[in-house]
Picture 1 (tube, rainbow, N blue to C red):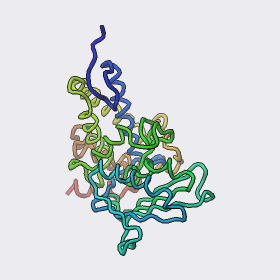
Picture 2 (picture 1 turned 180 degrees about the vertical axis):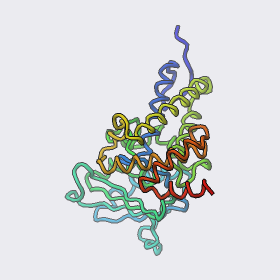
Picture 3 (picture 1 turned 60 degrees about the vertical axis):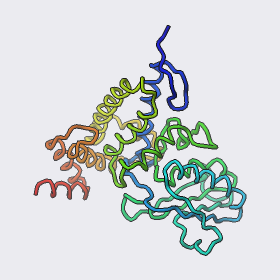
Picture 4 (picture 1 turned 135 degrees about the horizontal axis):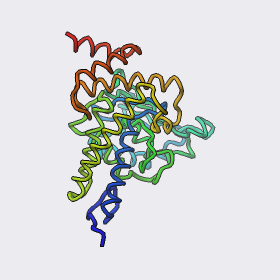
Length: 308
């Protein structure tokens, strides 16, 4: 009789250990992909550092108000961020989140809803705008609410952020993992993918039953090593473009070129700080120099500080 691990992983009960391991590895891949913008470039962590004050607008906004508010309450509740509605109040002009319901002729058929995040620096969200077509508002609510919280990627895994959602009227377990990690004390705005990936992975690890965690920890470490190798090849321009870029949806040659420069910088920071990889000053300088030659100002500043 096959030995089984009891408990829950991503909402599934009593799965064999091998299945738990597969789900964990797929979960890690999804958490890595969520750190990539749909343009095909890796991103830093951005999040709210203050209360969210939401205002609804649009001729048919009232018809979608309750469902959208439920979605926003769900994501902010998971993140521990206070949500206040200011629609129709004296504080309406102080809203830092606007939800606009548009006519069905607006936007594009392949993008019936969109979220714009505004930040002066790529660390803290200052304001956000959600636009959605009237006929699509119901299915956009949870997807766009995740984006509102700063989670910008469109991974292929089991999450409402996927272009092919598994569920459209609530969050999936991986979405909750993302939000818990994104707004945990261990996460900070401006973190690079290699700084934030361990925080996300640890939150996923904590969702496992205790008996499965030792094997999952080894799988996590292997995933880190494999991902770093893939990203080194990508930053160097060696081999095929990684699947995470191909799946980003709107990647362009310019986006890929920019992404290689950003990834070189992120690798340099990772080796400099020992994030996801062991500290290695030689590797740090190598990648920072590569990024600096590609015009990355962050890399130029880090090199200057490192050499002082």
